[in-house]
Each structure stands twice: as structure tokens, then as C-alpha cells.
Length: 165
Image 1: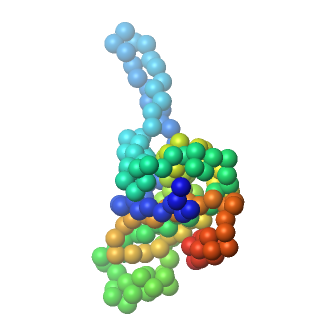
Image 2: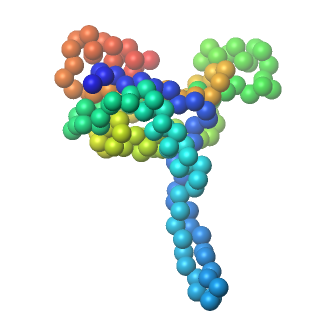
């Protein structure tokens, strides 16, 4: 088992959306309510799973069985092309932080739900969640997951370095 799992999800983040409802009318006049998950949300969840599996093809969720986990999600937003060079430098240096949609909680919910049964047994194991938005030259998300238990001093130092940035 890897002590710290770290992988990249290319592209813009997709927020978790609520289930949608549609009224369907049959030819005979009967009406039904159909419940569905938006396609773009399903596609993004599948993309998260694929990115994880590309980096950790042999990983089993039982590696983290019944352990509290820490998850750090760093969302990199692409800098708009319309900004000045001065502002661009400030964005890259972290002086200007994105306050744009999607919300941090909705991004993390989508990613953590997608990793259920793949990276860990259940996202209820995540005891510490850190979500950070930054600007970068391209849009992507970095996900880091580690166990909060049974670590050597070196592992604790590495985890502290990774998760307390």
C-alpha cells in the first residue's frame, strides 16, 4: 500500500449536483416522474475514477480499511486570458485567490463520492478534508489521500509537509 496516494485530474472541476427530476408523459396520457443524475456529473465522476486507476491500478480500498483518512484537494483554475500581465503574476504567486464557482464543498463531494469503493471503502473515513483553490496556467486538480494512523515519525513529517501547506 502506498503511504500517500497522490494523483492528478486534468480539466476543470465539476461540482456535485443534486439529482434532477423530469415529468414524462406517455402516449396514453399517464405521467411519470423520472429521477436522473446529470450527464456531466456522471462523466466527471468516471473521469476521476479513471485518473485514479491509471496511477494506482493495483490499489485495493481495503488498504485503508477502517482507518481515518486525510484528503487534500488542490483545485487549479486556469487564469483568464483577459487579465493583465501584472495581475497574472499576482495570481500565479497566490496573491489573488480564486473565489469563483464551483464551491469547494461541492468539488470535494463529487471527488470523494467518485472514489468510494476504489481508493477507500467509504468516504465516511475521511476525518480531515482540506480543499484549496489556486490559479495556474492550466486547469487541473491534485488529490492526496493518506491514513491518519500508524505512521513513523518520517511519514508524519512528510504528511505534515504535504497537508499543512
